[in-house]
Amino acid sequence: MRLIDKVALVTGAGNGIGAATATRFAEEGALVIVTDINPESAQTVAAQINASGGRTEAHAQDVTDEALWDRLVAGVVATHGHLDILVNNAGIAITANVENTSLEDWRRTQAVNGESVFLGTRAAVKVMQERGGSIINISSIEGIVGEPDATAYNYSKGGVRIFTKSAALHCARQGYPVRVNSVHPGFILTNMVEAGIAALPEGQAQEMYERLLGEIPMGAMGEPLDIANGCLFLASDESRYMTGSELVIDGGYTCH
Ligand code: NAP
Image 1 (tube, rainbow, N blue to C red):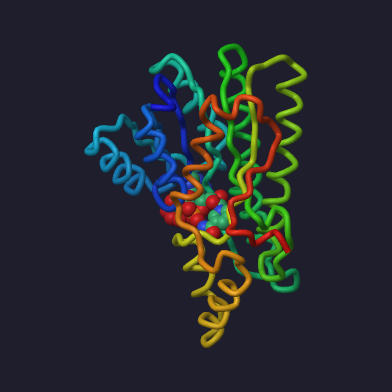
Image 2: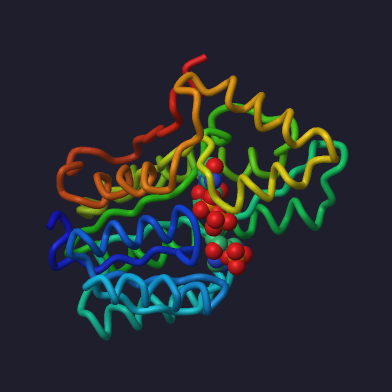
C-alpha cells in the first residue's frame, strides 16, 4: 500500500494510460478522483475500480476549462481534506506535418496537451504547498525527439517537458514540499496509437506499424501498465528526492 491515505486526481482517466494509472493508484491505497472529458468512460473506470475494492469518484472534466480546474480542486480539498497527487494525463494527437497542420488543430493540441498541464499544475500547487504533493505531467518521447507527422504534438509535449522543470524549480525555491516530474512514454498500445496509425493512408498503416516495431530496441510496444507503474513510483514517497526530472519509459526508443 504505497499510496495509503493519499488523494490522487488523474485526468483523461477514462481510457488507456490514465485508466491504468488510476487503477494502479487505487490498488496501492489511494482515493482516486477519475476525470475525463467523457463522463461515461470516467464512470466506467471508477465503477471497475470500486468493484475491485478501490475507492474512487468520477467527474466530467474538460482539462482546457480554467474555471472548472479551480472548482474541481477546491471541491476535492473541501470533501477529502487534501490533494496529494495530480497526474496531468489527458491528451490528444493529430497526425499531421508542418505543412498540412491547420491552425485550429495546432491550437486545440496546445490547449489540451499544454495549457491544461499549466492550469492543473497551478491549481494543484496552490493546495499542495503546505502539506506537500507530487505532480506528474505526462509528456512523451515526442517531447524529446522529433516526429515529422506529429508537429503540433511535438511542440506541446516539448513544452510539457520544460514547463515541468520551471514549476519544479519554483516549488523548490519557495520551499514548498511539492515535486513536479514528467513522464515520457514511448509507443504504448492505446486508442491514441491505434487511431494515429489508422489515420494514415491505406497501405501505409501496416508499414508504419512494422517500422515502429523495428525502431523499438525491445521489439514491442508498451502497455498502459508500464506507464502506470512509473507514475506510481513518482507519486509515492520512494521518489522523494526527485523533482524536475524526466522518467523515460520507451523500450529503449530514445537510446539512438
Ligand atoms: P487515450 O487512450 O486516447 O486516452 C486519453 C484520454 O484523454 C481519453 O479518455 C480522452 O477522452 C481524454 N481526453 C481527451 N481530450 C480531453 C480533454 N480536453 N479533457 C479531458 N480528457 C480528455 O490516450 P493515451 O495513449 O492513454 O494517452 C494518455 C497520455 O499519454 C496523453 O497525454 C498522451 O499524449 C500520452 N502519451 C501516450 C503515448 C502512447 O503511445 N499511447 C505515448 C506518449 C505519450 P476521449 O477518448 O473521450 O476523447
